[in-house]
Length: 142
Image 1 (cartoon, rainbow, N blue to C red):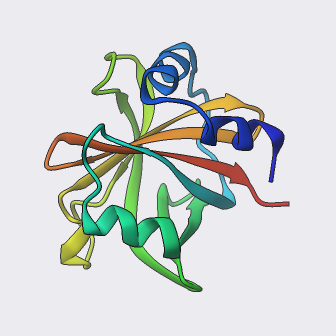
Image 2: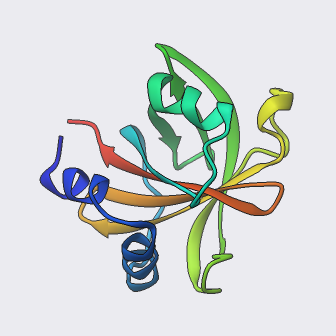
């Protein structure tokens, strides 16, 4: 695991908010990433989030098609559409991961957004029904 991703795991929500606000998103990632759940919204640890801690392994980006799949327990599921948009946190540019058109009903109300915090390492914010739920990290697979 990249040293930067390990450092993210030890950060508080306030520290991650500050880092996210300083980060940028210039280009769409492509290929496989490893993922890790970092911080849940203060006081919120829903069953879905606990499930993700144990089974979610990352995302596979297809920059040409502007789509991705999540890697969950060895399966590629939960397709999403990618586009650049404005972050709900600060209104600045981010990569939006939109599951609203997914065939998987359980993720249709989820929107993720990510920014690159160091080369090949991304910090993401997940929202369910428009409410911030958790932070996650991604790093390019070797």
